[in-house]
Each structure stands twice: as structure tokens, then as C-alpha cells.
Amino acid sequence: MVEVYRDIGASVGEIFTALADGWTYASWVVGASHMRDVDPDWPQLGARLHHRVGPWPISLDDTTTVVAVEQDRLLELDAHAWPAGAARIRLTLKPLGLDRTRVRLAEAFSSPLARHIPERAQAVLLVPRNRESLARLDDLAVHRVRGRQR
Image (cartoon, rainbow, N blue to C red; front, top):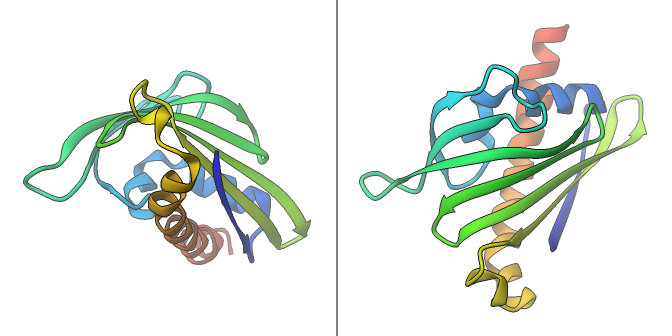
């Protein structure tokens, strides 16, 4: 898996609250362009997000499913139908203090064809995208979630 991380000035609870709001997915995940629906039990095991990826007018319907979840610690997702086919995404949260958390985002292509792309080539595509996604998640957790809780 290709992995990036970011230290965010928010608690694990604040960050998990941002992740648990499925309607914000397209605002922090680079490439997701529009939310179509969110299962009411998101982010529980098996719950799905229904969204579009890519720019209009060539965007595609996509579905992302929770495959593992541990409150305030882990969210693992299986994303389908995006240009590379499918991907496994793991977000882990590690507290660095009361209001500081290290968020690790690991991703790997999982479709039969894309799995054969060397990890170095995957990194060229995924590292910049996922760094930007974590920067957006940082803004969401610090400014939107924390702002609502104060």
C-alpha cells in the first residue's frame, strides 16, 4: 500500500466525526465530485457511500463500502468503479496529544488489472492526491467540526 500521513491539530474524536459525516466525502477526497446518497448507518461495517468521481461530463458513479471500522481509530474502505477499477483505503488515527492526531492514509489498487501496477508507479499517482485529501480533511476537522463543537 502507498501511505501518507499528516499531523492534524484536532482530536481523534473530531477527525472521526468528520469521517463519519458521509455527506462531506466529496469535499475532502480528491477525485470525488458529487455525493448521490449516504447509507443511514455510515460509517458502520458494510455501509456505503454513493458518489461520482471525475470531472463533469465524464464523471462515473462510484460506491465506497466500509470493510473495517473502529471508532476514533480506524476506517477501512473499498472503493469501486473509479478509473483504476477499485482500491482499498485505510485511514488510521493516532492521538499525539489532546488536540493533535496523526492521520495515516494508505491506499492500494485492488482490481485484478490495476494490482499489477508497480507500487512506485502507484505512488506517483496516489501520494500527491492523498496528501491533498489529508490537507482537506485537516481543514474540515479543524474548522468545521471543531467550530460546531465550540
